[in-house]
Length: 87
Image (cartoon, rainbow, N blue to C red; front, side, top):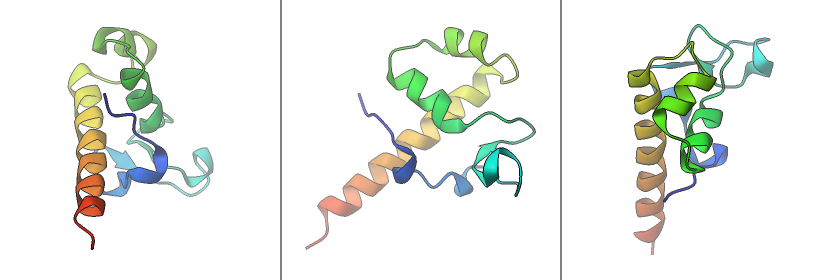
């Protein structure tokens, strides 16, 4: 399983994310919340189920949680493939 790290993910490209100066120190958050997307992805990567993550973050829908995970894993895959193809 891929463990995503904040430095590997460009959250600004995800439609569910916003960055607001002064809100959570300007870090990427799920739009309309104070939830850090890394927390969602790291919970999933640590073995939590979608239902458990939803219980812990009831302000997010299951489809939102799935999208965050898919986006993060897609970003990590793209970055690693790019690094592998560098001369």
